[in-house]
Amino acid sequence: MKLNLRFIIITLGLVAMCGFGTMASVPNGYYTSIYGKKGTPLKTAIHDVIRPHTKLTYASLWNHFPSTDVYPEQINGKWLVWDMYSDNKTNQIYYYPNGTSGLNREHSCPKSWWGGDQNEAYTDINHLYPSDAKANTAKNNYPLGVVKVASFNNGVSKVGTPQSGMGGGCQSVFEPADEYKGDFARTYFYMATMYQDYTWKYTYMFSNSSDLTLSQWAYTLLLEWARQDPVSDKEIDRNEAVFLIQNNRNPFIDIPGLEEYIWGNKQGQVLEEGGGEVSGDPELIYPAVGSTINFGEVALGKTVALDVVIKAANLTNNLKIKVYGTNSDQFAKLPVNEITRNAANQGYTLKVTYSPNALGDHTARLLFYDGGLPETGVGVTLTGSCQPVPTLSAVVATDPINVTENSFTATWCLAEETVDSYNVNHIVYNGSQIITDETIPVPVDDLDESTIGMLDFENLAAGYTHTYRVQSCRLGCTSEWSNTITFTTSGIDEIEAFAPISVESYVGGVIVRCSDNRTGISIYNMQGMLVRRIAAVEDGEFIELPVGNYIIVSDHNPNPVRASVR
Image (cartoon, rainbow, N blue to C red; front, side, top):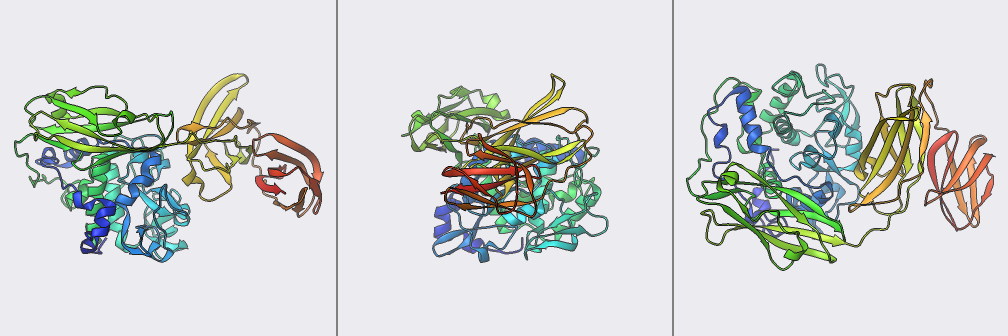
């Protein structure tokens, strides 16, 4: 991005909000091992440097975005989201605890591409950005590219048919604004290096058959974008903020032009030594000095553990560790209180656990000392927020839609209370034998602002029986499982089930509105229990119901309709 806003970013207010006043720079010796290499060995050396990191929880991302993605000016005394997907300066979306209305946690490199959810890449904030929900929905899981004919354009993001030679076989691409194209390019260079060992399910831009990880058309485009939009202060400051959170960095921001040695016009050339030489003095490279390990919100009685990656240099003896401070009792005892000098110098993963027994916000310090470090040691902050155990009612699973011989879409009614995600349990049977039993997490961000939950299942073998059920999740707690939907895709070409119905709520019941008669009306309460089953209704028919909230579906319209009876 070409905007130079550093003079704004260092204003007193933003320093107080984001902690930029304590930002770390590239640690001494962090990149030493990558110099003197070229080609694939260079890319692998970079991978080995940046791969060790603190894995975040998905729920904690809202706690981190105010440090990484705040627009450097206020409106009405509030901090704006710095959204690279829309013009939030105009929309005036502000940060507040636990996110913002209309904002998603967007995987700039779509998570469906590697086919995984709860893994390192899923919560890697180096490629997770706050995004306008509508733009995120339009972006879908499309590759980057230059749009020829736009189907979506909000003035910052465009989605549409790609120019010739782009898309990798996908019929649509996502094109960011010119001022952010370099940001996205360097993010993708990072992902192609950080997760070069992944097997990519969708290969629009990524390749499983090349050490370069990126397809030729993809890296050609990204190189062009990186050259046109060089590293900006926004990226530098975000890189520093991310380092304080998960203890690794994007080297394509730290070393401008590094991508040219791997994919560009310097392929085959040796990367000569740059800065970052080890001084010889004992030091802690990461966790970064001044960083915070945030466990996010946790329900009372629940436990969250994070792997904290430790790397030191030139220690003279063993590294000692302890947790101290006012709320240290809310963090479980460390599994070790000392790491050997060799283990710390080579890299060590420490499991730190937040297990609160009292409601409220908790803070402690994780101290590293001895080993030749300064006499006072080096400390990082531990934070977490203990919340009351949430009350979660069972959701209602509804009939599948878009059913073909080898695919379907599971549907369910979204919970009325606040939830973090849904678990969808899908079982495949061959007679009474279980062929597959999988539970897939679906974050609420993936469902946008709909009242209907949906999850696609593809590439299924024909002739088997399928079941699915759903539960809601919040702060590590889960609801009871919903009712179970059972069906078979065998012999079904396709089901079109979109004939709409609507209801009007009245005292003592509802009036059904439909274009023609509907059969198989099922009415559920919010606990998932079937209240009434009606063989058929016609337009304008009144259905008497007790006071309460209901979900109504029909044979021709499995998409649920909400109703409230006074």
